[in-house]
Amino acid sequence: MNEKSTLAPRRLPDAWVQRIFATMQGHYGTRFLNMWRTGQDLPDGRDAGMVNAMNHWAEKLGGYKDSPETIKRALENLPPEPPSLPQFAEILRHSWVPPAVPQLTNSLTQEELARNRRRIREIIESLNITKRKEAND
Image 1 (cartoon, one colour):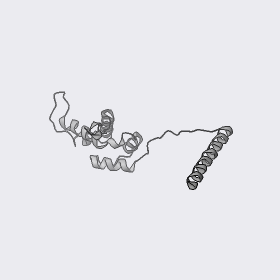
Image 2: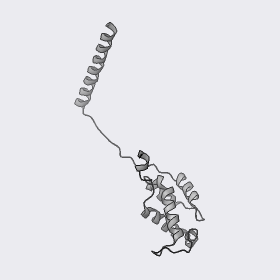
Image 3: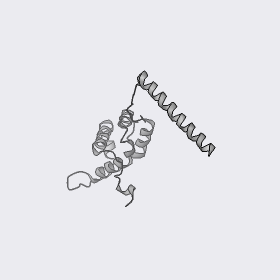
Image 4: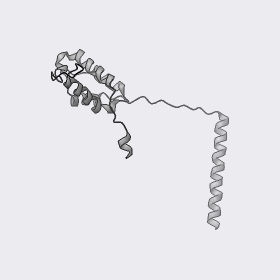
């Protein structure tokens, strides 16, 4: 079994996709939902087309899992007509917000800086001694 087959595919959490669809329904009404409905009910009462569409969107938009701010911005800037998946993906590309990356800060004291400089000089001197020995051999 190779490493790739053990990794779960990236997909948006179902709750995120439900929120996207709810926002679209709120914005466009049934015009958006009717794009996906098939009228075929699953045993749990959900529409088969809606379930399929939401699963497909979750898979295709998985690359935005680490950038919820991008999804939020896209939903705040929807076009006049309900978008298809490719159209929404394009809106996401134009709404890109890089994921927040925690910044590590490490302020060294003057004593730590001096100790690091001494250590660097020692390492350089050690390397120079090694080079001189190799050159003389």
